[in-house]
Image 1 (tube, rainbow, N blue to C red):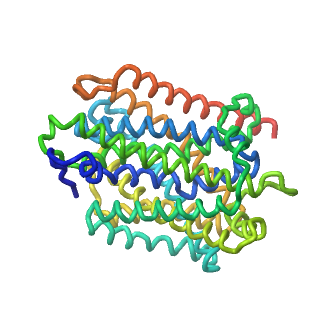
Image 2: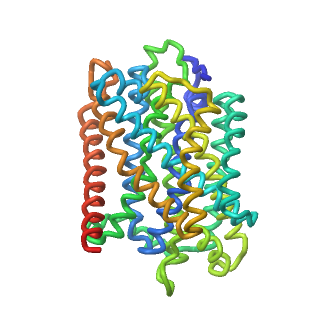
Length: 425
């Protein structure tokens, strides 16, 4: 599955041929796990954590641009490069951590789709969880169409999600001055363990470990005429595709937090912390049933679009680290089976409240695993013998290491605050 990019095409023609991988990655940045963390953050603290969404999105843009650089410069995806360049003893641990991240992501997609089916069709949650196993067939069908049609389907789903939230914000009419203030960093607020937990969840939901592996592989689906000479052009257009797609993902994530902050923050009673409650409250708050309907439709689109990329990432990780390639249907069933077990147990034992807690927890787990993908990525992009003339310049390496440091500090703070709360409790 590759797309030919001729050397003589115009700038627009070339960009349209390159456009696609960024959106396949971007859907992972607006999956149901993002919804759960943004909803919890907005309903608990209004617009105060909007700057965390913005910072996470900027970090995502930087790290995903490094993925483009690695794939184009070395001809290797991140898993292949780690297996070749890092000590052999690290191969198995890094593979296991990557697989754990993919399963955590798949849990969020599975749960989000099940909740959407429950809200839109009154389908019981256990049935919805079981029904999501059938999206394996959808994935297989789409992959048979070829990469361009798969990308077109994903772009259409992203457009649907964005349109739904545009209407929601028009109905809400939030105080845009307060929204703008939410973009100003408030580092002193992290003394609150709950805010730190949500910040780590937003980070894990926004900068996803498996997307780093996937994107470095997806950029190789473009075959450039005069490939070696066109590497700089390939990097420029691929980076542009990434920036545009992730900017749209930021708009969606910001819209979810703004919708939650404007609709639910400051209301009497406990903050709105789950997707079902938000769905049922939007109609009386915004004064029209279309608000809830759009919320449910966008949630289903988010779950189904992001589930496509989890399987693709699983194939990249397994083949890159272990040189094992499973048929797509086997890989999909393996990932979904591992995600089904905790989801089904949680639904049966704890119901709606437990399933939403599982959503947020899955994103925190992603945050904890992120350094094990981000640190090798930054290190590899700084190696001239691997990257050649596309080695990351010093300023880009400095920014990359700064991102990795921020991720490590947030995760360390989360672990410390959680341990302290456990000891006090």
